Length: 242
Image (cartoon, rainbow, N blue to C red; front, side, top):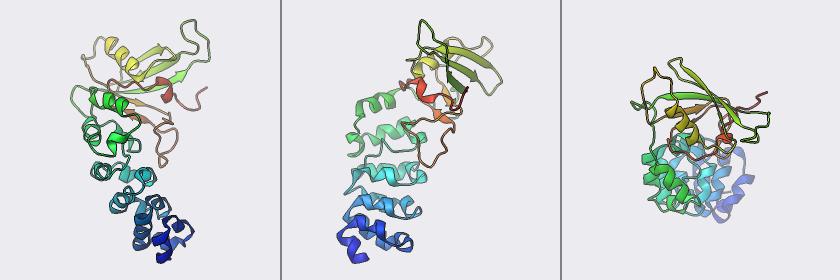
């Protein structure tokens, strides 16, 4: 088997499960062709060394590793330095980390991202890191109305709750972006609430299908910690709403 995978890495998919969990066998396979990493055991797909070997011949190998590794900034940056296309496949947490994105874009793999300019704007925007003083958290439930509106075909109705117990409601245009909602909340915050110019949003009960991780349950909350986020608000609608 070792001779076979050393000549053709993808042959690993036909190996017995015990062999696909053998680090030496999988290493030989990914050295020949990085895409073979996807056929390794779950444990080995979270091995940083195997990932760093795999991206040398298959830059998109990052998408085949487990969520814990995609949430590891050190491992992801090293993969980027070796040519791995990291920006498209990192965890939600890292995709909202300004410092990580700026450093990732300086790596050979990070600079090859198809959406480089969008990511650059994304990273250079004001970021409200979790727990940062002055950046309150708001939990949002967004639903698309079934009623036609003259200003928007099917407007998005949002319920916003702050941990303090304060609540707000608003209706956004169907084409609104996340930063439009953030701007509304800043400009229309409750009068007894301290002013803020940054915000951390958690969209409850939705699935971000463009960025969803396969290891996460569809319908789980998605956190957005970027102030100037231009992603469509309708990406974050609550699932299974009436």
